[in-house]
Image (tube, rainbow, N blue to C red; front, side, top):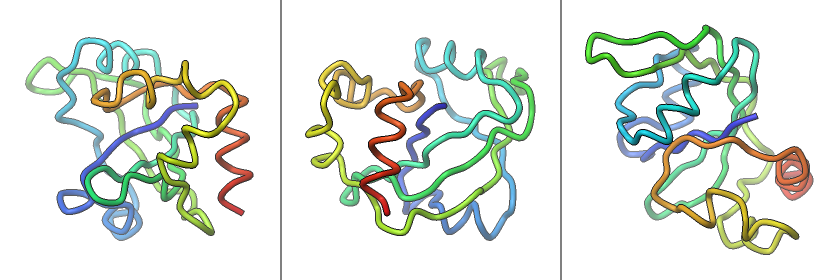
Amino acid sequence: MYLLKTEPSEYSFDHLERDKETVWDGVKNPLAQRFISQMKKGDLCFIYHTGKERAVVGIGEVSSEPYKDSNNLWVVRVRPVKRLKRPVSLEQIKRIEGAKDFYLVRMPRLSVMPVPKEIWEAILSLSS
């Protein structure tokens, strides 16, 4: 389970739903690159809108094994699974027990990160 950040004015969950699948690319941070390289086809991922929204808005699924693009960066293909009934804001996530150790809180500029099972379940609970 992962979280993928995107600036909604550049590529939003709406775009992902419209496109039905996309290559998750443009990630250069070495730690985020490592996380992409560890993804497996079928892994679920939260789609998080940055900027003014700062919220988890939907769930995607990794639809390919990681591979290197023409820039020698790790990428995966992602398809939409579902939009959350209610977005879950960063402020709500920060109030989840144990969230202070979550990469989204600890390293807010990181664009790809694993999501611990307890945090995943708490976000799902807050979204319904």
